[in-house]
Length: 169
Image (cartoon, rainbow, N blue to C red):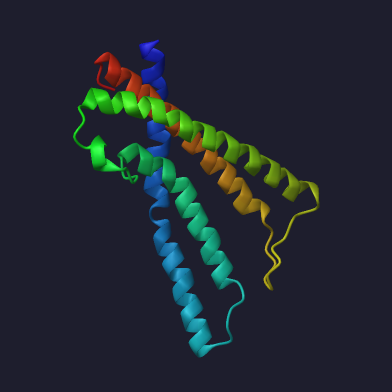
């Protein structure tokens, strides 16, 4: 069983690390979109697409970069008590609380799949803005990001189980 957990951890960590390292450069795309927005409002006719495109890019950046942030420990944690605990106590606490995250992600995934299916079912749901882009691409990205976060949460649980056993992951 330990070999299966280690294999799963390696596969998920590798996938999310590679994707996260690529997605982290998305901040430059967001900056370029917002720079174009400022320039077009100042010097040309304002572009209708820039604000919404920046929002879509930010959602992509956040949702696909989230699993990498969890993997590297860059997520925010309440350290009032946690910081003074031993590694084993932290692993026990994390192994328990990860189930809340998994439950939340499963509910989010259920809603995301339902919303994405709705978007496809009715001929391509569009945004009510003046630009009116299709919403299915960003919904698919959100579902993929939620699945990746769910896989990473399970990997973090396996890492905690290995720490509890005294085996370094």
